[in-house]
Image 1 (cartoon, one colour):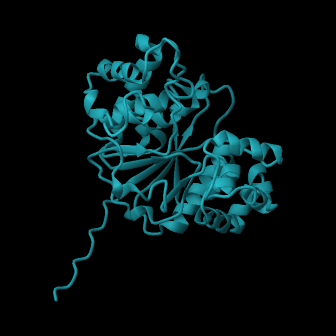
Image 2 (image 1 turned 90 degrees about the horizontal axis):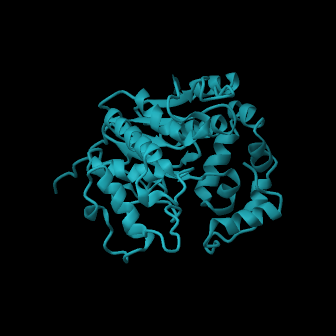
Length: 335
């Protein structure tokens, strides 16, 4: 009997997250510590993009010294960048401008800082030539107004604005005018083969939509949705689309986009809580996180476990707002 051939080792890649003073710097610590814990074979660079003081940031956004030292100790590289287009008025634009920090031509994956690595991220077989993004989303945009344009008209106008084939972006298994028929992602993670090409297009599309939107967007809000409006157009233009089954571990057993620490305890699986509390128990991590109120109260004062007992994770409310309301009523909504 012939010996089985070993599975090919996935191509190394770089990871980009964005952090600044306050909540995001503490989330970055959790991301970096969970990556080190769950994916010890990760061979790429973890680059933490840090916006710098300037005209678009009325307050200094730079990471504090204790967190900066800990991130370096965890193997992260903190790289500064200047905000030229978004800044404090639209901080979600950080992820767009920060892509310019990454080495051109080297595969990359972007993650929001409010993500835990719970499995071996280094072994995820990313199809680098076919970029994609997270499908853990709700139908948040566009909001269809009475007598206004529908989903199809809005998304068609955006695709045509950038010379893209609209029909090939559709999921024809979904009915017409149902939001899931149209290419729409959560921007909590996305990846591509070349951050320079991806970033240039992301910035160009986002600025065009913000500064000169098509008439179909007259009733639509782009704050905070601009990045998620532009992202599917960028991915489609680069030959990508919805993620395939090989990426099921993202938003699954390999990564957890928890978003708010209270929500992590309320709705995420046992593995995410186990990883969170394991890395938070390290003394070097604890010294930094105890200054962040959500971590102090939910992790170290064990109030997160109380929040967890309020919900049956096999039968959660369909809408996130119902979870938030229950947590707020119990004094357990912290962010």
